[in-house]
Image 1 (cartoon, rainbow, N blue to C red):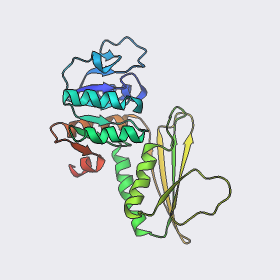
Image 2: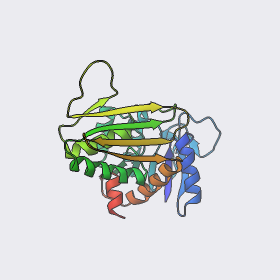
Image 3: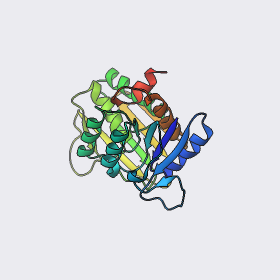
Image 4: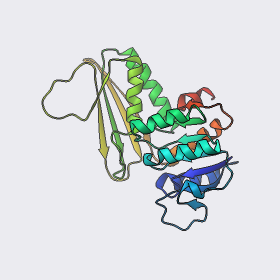
Length: 247
């Protein structure tokens, strides 16, 4: 599996490179990173400079590259694993349009543990229709978007079984909690890799579902699994549920 890695010199780009070096059958043929500081000959400053043949693209860059990335992927007919979060509505629309022409795998989090957590949250929210739900996410102090894409995906899992659910990001001032509210809270501190906690409570009990990532390697491993899954697929938008169905 030959991979073009976007965000080659970033924190996650380095994790993917290390993971691919250990994996059997995975090769990073080149990278794209406008912010790269090193002199790695495999890294390009723009998509225009990429001439290498590849099977798939993995993106761990910044959502501002979405348009150029999708243009390049469609031109080359390459499937894309999107592991970048924080896209604007316009960028999301561009991704959706591209998925009509090439296979696109999009997930807020590439940990299989988070996929399991999401399934449990969906089931628990359905079992406790009157339960109050709060989501707390913690990340390192360099993360740009808040709430995290994973926290928002957990909220969407709640919405699947509670269509009336309303996201309340943070809480301040005067105002009583409404039954449809789902609080989402972001903590930014130090070098936290990623902690997501979902609390579902009634007047008599509380369930706490929590996932903690100890290393960014878990996201790199997941992105490589998603890349292998995507090769040979028909155009469309895929996610972690599709990967889990494949076993």
